[in-house]
Length: 422
Image 1 (cartoon, one colour):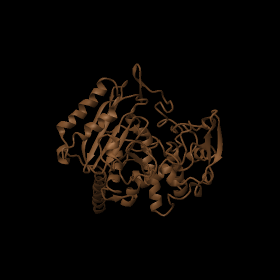
Image 2 (image 1 turned 135 degrees about the vertical axis):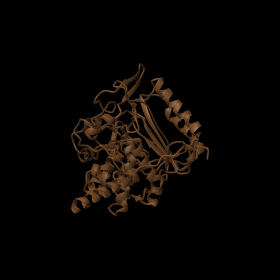
Image 3 (image 1 turned 180 degrees about the vertical axis):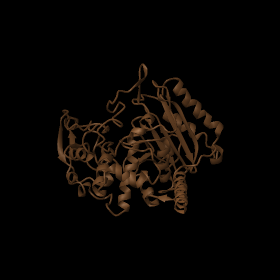
Image 4 (image 1 turned 135 degrees about the horizontal axis):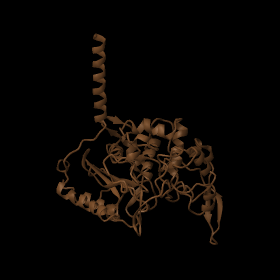
């Protein structure tokens, strides 16, 4: 009997511990006024996005605004699946595409902090296929020459998208097409990311290293690099070092089958209104995130997540590497990642750090926000930003590709900042 009572006590205490740890990983909610925002003014945000739904410009969306470490606004609109009449919810899971890049970039910086690499290292030190790369140079007659890269690309080149590698649609697109490597969508690939990336190394890039910003497979290569340096597959490494420590329990490369009903349906904006994207489709489609090979872990565009999970990730960056008593990277690493690294223009008033865009000149950019803000978005029309000056993060998830000329991103920013009153 005593042993039974003791076991019950142990079980009870363990349950309390699990509850404490789980709750410690969640973010507290607050009234907007408690964190210097106006409930009345935030209703303008709600009305505007409900209008997008009512006018059938958006299928559904979730918006999460956190300020001063607390959730000030969390609301879902429209449908997770229109045809099945399933409402969008706080627990809806989205394909976050290029929002994967920031998480993988943090993973690379963690390896530097562990002494396993330096971002100034040539990628070829760890992946020999990248020690000598090629560059395609366009000619006036529409053909091109292939020349040697003037130096090996570095890990920093990949983090800043200055390695010269694109998504395969540029000067030597015929060779990339022949190699079956074009576009950011990898979920249907029946080969591990290492195989795909090593084939990339044989193809000509778009520019010489560090000469210009070329958006492309840089972070997919970084994901493969993480696997080589850590000795773990990318999904395992991220789960162990970032996702689990932050309590990002709904962030996956491929969805567990018991969560498939929560995956938001992809729609496309067409002349005839919203149309359900094909299944599985490719870059425009539902994708093979539930039914598929589950072999390729795309560091550039492969993750699925929720608004709450991604907010936790942004909060740790806003907190200089710490969240709810858990530190995953140092304040100086966060500082380096969110500082502009480009010696040439990226956009008006905007730079690029290590995995994030950065705001350098607020007036030149001409949008509400703050200098020091870091951000990016995803192919399915999602976006996010973190504003250290206002102690604020914003996550906006929807599943719309293509979105055409929808102005929701601009209005999202305007309506959030106009709600700040303190």
